Image 1 (cartoon, rainbow, N blue to C red):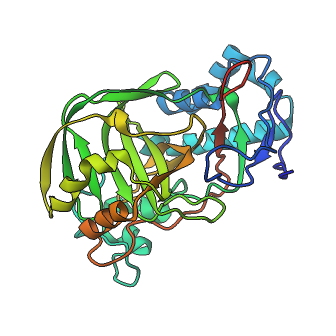
Image 2: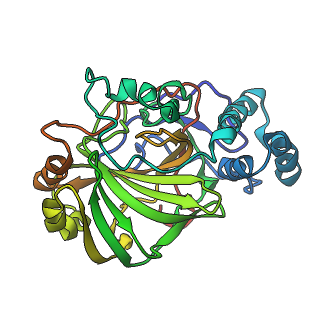
Image 3: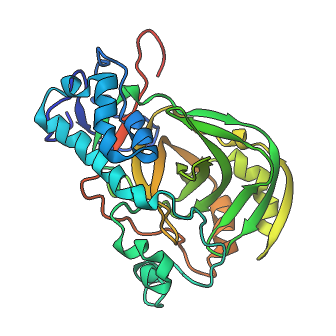
Length: 345
């Protein structure tokens, strides 16, 4: 039986250590879903939304009145956990409104250490990139450590639709950028508009130290400039259908941009409703913090030829465009798994 974290259980919620990131998706069978909270009406995700949009000082007052949170917690240790989570969000308030734009050109930075422009030097290349060096909420991280299972985080709500798109070689990655209204996701009542998706190889997030062959980032932004990224990791196997549709264009885009016509983001398959969530940053300069990360708990497959095409297009002979994992420190990582009360997970 996997060990539990050293935090007293919340009312009707338990702490788990996920034994492994299953290659078939899902939590180890020995990690059973805890029962739902009798209150059932509070999620740390709700707290996250309010803490970003409203002053932190009023957060506890507002949420305590709404949900009687302190009674629900029931222990000083659990209260400490929530405070740590909210403190990380409060820390990012001044930077949550920072520019969400990733660097569009490869010239200023590389992924090769020892060049003066590698990941360890990003924070010194440009004064606007200092968070790459000094930030406390940086991404990616290793997700194989202790997590808190919270069934009331709620399922990820996608409302994608086909729209015109282009494929672009940004030098450090291949990006599909939607030019029209391609839909949105909803995280706890906040809509995040779909902007683009891009790939990193190997994966940037690791799971108990395991790094997979590829990672897709689907980038969204809210009306207030808050960033939300969905990540999906891949191992070698059958070709990915979404990449199959783009394969010829990726091979022929060169160093520029190519119109794709109508692209349906709904063709990107998740394969699981279970996910990890934490607060982090962009994984490329300017390393903006305050990003809501959602990592799908399913390892999908990609062919070696597809992964090689993505690498050959941008790597200039190098084997990676993945930032090394960053310090997690005391940041909580949440894990959502649906409640199976007569239904399916």
